[in-house]
Length: 34
Image (cartoon, rainbow, N blue to C red):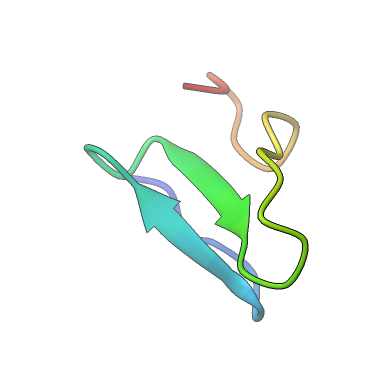
């Protein structure tokens, strides 16, 4: 399970994070990216 930093939210199964401000995927936030 990914723990997203503040200002980010989990997407899908929680293995990816999205910047809620820029609405851009940040695959480098989590080790497995997606």
